[in-house]
Amino acid sequence: GENVEQHPSTLSVQEGDSAVIKCTYSDSASNYFPWYKQELGKRPQLIIDIRSNVGEKKDQRIAVTLNKTAKHFSLHITETQPEDSAVYFCAAYGDPGTASKLTFGTGTRLQVTL
Amino acid sequence: DAGVTQSPTHLIKTRGQQVTLRCSPKSGHDTVSWYQQALGQGPQFIFQYYEEEERQRGNFPDRFSGHQFPNYSSELNVNALLLGDSALYLCASSLGGLAGGQDTQYFGPGTRLTVL
Image (cartoon, rainbow over all chains, first blue to last red):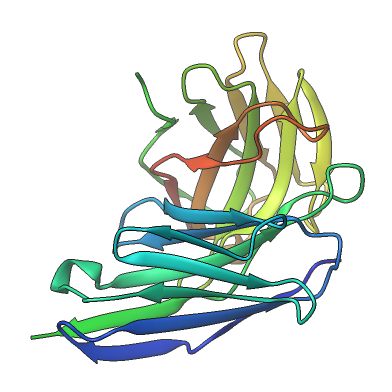
């Protein structure tokens, strides 16, 4: 089955700096890659996603890149703010015709300091 | 537009007991997936329901079962509770099941289950 690895497990940046979180996946059939932000005690919230037919997607301060050949994708947050502090999860979703399910990484705890 | 809702918010049970958790999907969605999130971990897929049938299952024992109703709401049942079942149980709704459609999943607030 699909295996998603996520790095780093913790990340501390100063306000205004950029943050990058990286994930790799194992199933070449995976074709959808969402990123979720989870604040303490709250539900995971979708912040951005990318499908296999594009290499990059941007939404204001957040961008995601995908390299299907290398089977890795990354989340980029620019001009970080204290409210960006949370746990971020990457996930991969496989081919609907096969064993399709959303497999999550282990999470990255991002701390944005003043 | 109502988002995904879950009940109850918190639940405390003892080992060996049975529990039922409930989920109502986002308006317009017809597919419900259940996840278990242990403390400090990412959500782990339990199963997915579409058209009132279990369409996909993760690596969870048969003690975990579910149901989907005609209005698309869903229940997760866990029998013979173990201490290790203590976790946040999340449901997520989407549209179109496994055979295409939109696979974007939106999560509910979760049910925190504590097994003593």
